[in-house]
Image (spheres, rainbow, N blue to C red):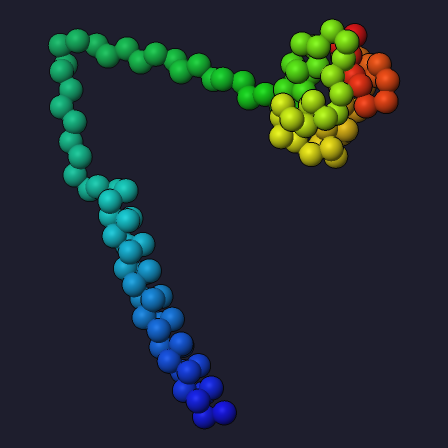
Length: 116
């Protein structure tokens, strides 16, 4: 029992030392992220035009499934969809239900879906 108490005290001491080191590291990283003096020299003779950044639309899971389904004329089965997207069955079935409600796909058989 005495050994257990000693071991726990030693572990506690080590954890406190590690905690202090982590706090110091966080402070150092904060200094690196926010440098105090960064002056930029700007040539005032030429006006600077900033282009508008284009936002890329992120595909939803349903959109990616629909993209795969429309490539197969005879329809895509669940196993093919799982292989192509790395989604699990539940996610595929939920998104197939959404696509069916939208009228984009229909069932061609059990677990086989075709573009409408």
